[in-house]
Length: 224
Image 1 (cartoon, rainbow, N blue to C red):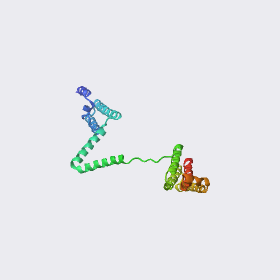
Image 2: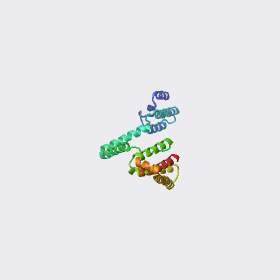
Image 3: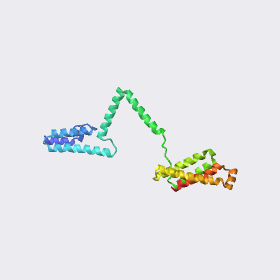
Image 4: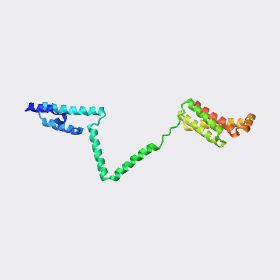
């Protein structure tokens, strides 16, 4: 009898040895293994067969994970989640609609708001290019924009100093100092006869006074 049982067990698959269906969860397989081991009693050969079948299923689960397939636990959890969702959809349709609306809102928010990144100003050529751009804007824009361009340049200089590790008050103080020095130089140019003649031909006095200030501010940006 024992030999016949061992022959029959040798012909069985690991699922049949443990008495579980294919695709059973890991908990069901482990529970079936424990029950079969108790039923085997003192039959060491049958116990070895049971343990071997359990190990084969366990290795199969690990290989499935490595190859990207769904494991026993993940599959059973997915089935349970589907069952819960079906119950909610059948008994609480309003709740399922609210969940769908939240998902749509999250996706729309991610697609609606663009990512805004502040220029790093780490590259020398980038700093120089922005400095030339601001100088050109100062020359071609109306006099009403002079203060705006000087204010933006002062803020950029403050930002560069803060990024280098200085405190905000100290950075702002140095930026205002650079601006003041530039405006003082601009005031000195105002009394120059050549500058007065130039202002009569092309540039206004306000623009000429602002040019040294914006140049000194951007020298600070480039050097820091």
